[in-house]
Length: 321
Image 1 (cartoon, rainbow, N blue to C red):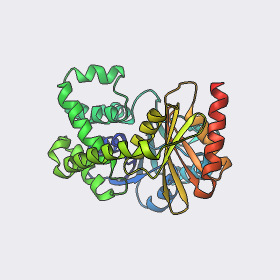
Image 2: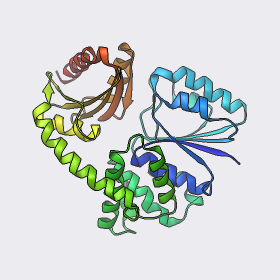
Image 3: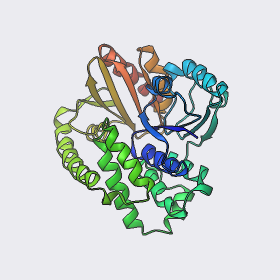
Image 4: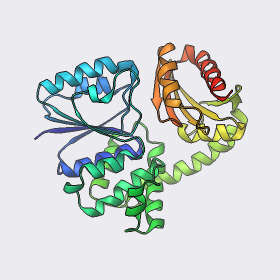
């Protein structure tokens, strides 16, 4: 059996990859991807494998029809595809239309879903690894996590989850490092045992504090949206800070790379569903977007960034009026 894993590169995706790798006895190849890149990554990297796992990766509206055709083609060739995820479904094509095994629940982390899916193949002690991923994705209040935490020391688990998520925060394209983390976790070793991970976590904490103070000077606002461009640190954390400091319901942190604006967006008002807004609006500006109702992301051509922000702010204002 030959297998390949495509996982999101955050802690939830990496934990899910580690749990899956255990069931493959360490023999699966691991690639890191994201919603916009998934189609190309599948197209160019699935060659002779007969099992494919897609973990913690939302399906982008931008490539949805091409992705459906590709997965259909791979399925007809005898490739078994398993999709485990907790992001909302696409708007235009439902998950059930894809010819693959689907494990999907928006209310829990992908780590929890993966552990439950493979539970009969995993040692019971691997549950703590799944909890790391759930904590890292702010989904540690589910019944399963609460019950399973009773078997562990809560303080230790949260410390280890913090080391993992903080150590990965500044390692976006360090794929070989992330593969080492996947292997380390698949052996049920503590994140704090991995010296490179803990050093990166400490460095990220210092960097985040500097960024937090810098955001106060750089932040800008529209009516119901605050934003900061090129913060010196984690985009996800920056989006949270800029929202809080300017007192807006939505915060946007933006990184400019060549001619693309990469956005991380956070919201504190449940009347706003970022996933639906971004999936719809981003396409109008030749971009892509989506995620969770209160935490999402987008990629927009830089030349259209400010138009996009104005449109997003307008749509948010309508929802709040």
